[in-house]
Image (tube, rainbow, N blue to C red; front, side, top):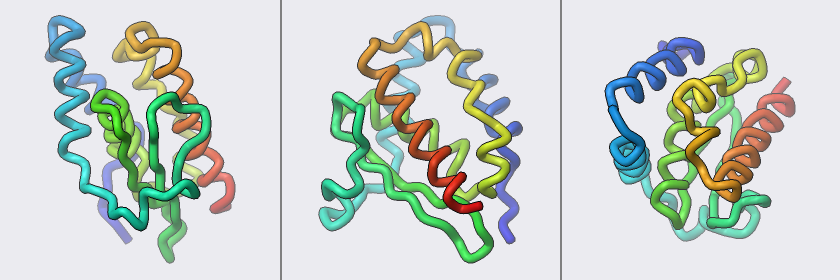
Length: 141
């Protein structure tokens, strides 16, 4: 069993983190820094089977399940801001119980203003990522 914080706590932490920034340029820099901190994927993992559909940038999202029924996620992107969006989603949803994922949609997206400050194509990509994570959680139940 893991001692990972609950999804609601992680979402609150993100909302609090973003509240520290006065403007969107600083928030974008923070998102990019989060993406830069993601562990690299191997060439064997960056294959078409792990590419998300519906994203303008290339987004690789690896999905799996632990023996305890937790959804395990890893990912990256070829675009800096999108890689940061991957990092945001992984921070909240990686290694969480499937039912908890389904019970806690990513409300932090609206609360930090991402839905208002992303281009339409990035918004579509983020929606594809959310959908893939929710699908994996549904499949785990």
